[in-house]
Image (cartoon, rainbow, N blue to C red; front, side, top):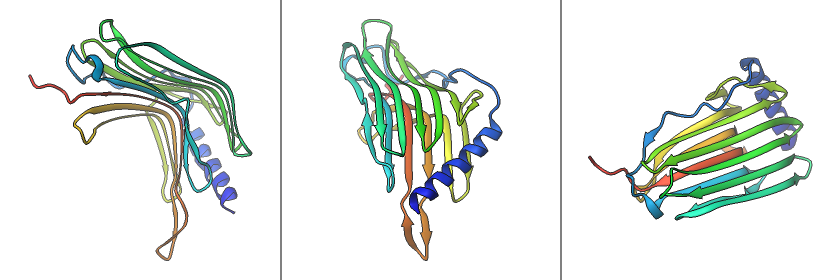
Length: 223
């Protein structure tokens, strides 16, 4: 029953999404923000994750988790095929990152050519964050098609109250406990809400991420 519920939930959510998107777009990066000073050096961390899922039905550890800490040449990882049983099938995954404080650009990028998630196709996924040597950082994502529908420019969020939410080109910025600042973009984030009956959770929440990139820097300097 839980799998049937999840399939129905995804189908309903994608149907609503398809009714709201009509044209192909490109990455809609958030405006550049000042994260750190020009000598950020070893302190910046760039990271890309292709697929991740958690919940009571589908659990996938961060796949092609590509992280760079400190100055490094580009690190690139590729995976031709990631079968996830009858729930999902992912093809052509690519993750890369680099930190180059003495050059102009450090970045993280996650790419997924296609994912069949419960018979719902998601194609052309790219999530990217970059930061220049002056500390100007941007994050943004693009998704070519979702459920056979070409997507307009993000960011886009669709919430079906009590059921689920879909976020396209979901860009966030937050401060960590140590004062460092993280900028993150998620190309596709699907959150299925928990089912509660009589105060008891009868079905856990589910979250699926496709394409995530982030940059974490020290706390912004004053002045």
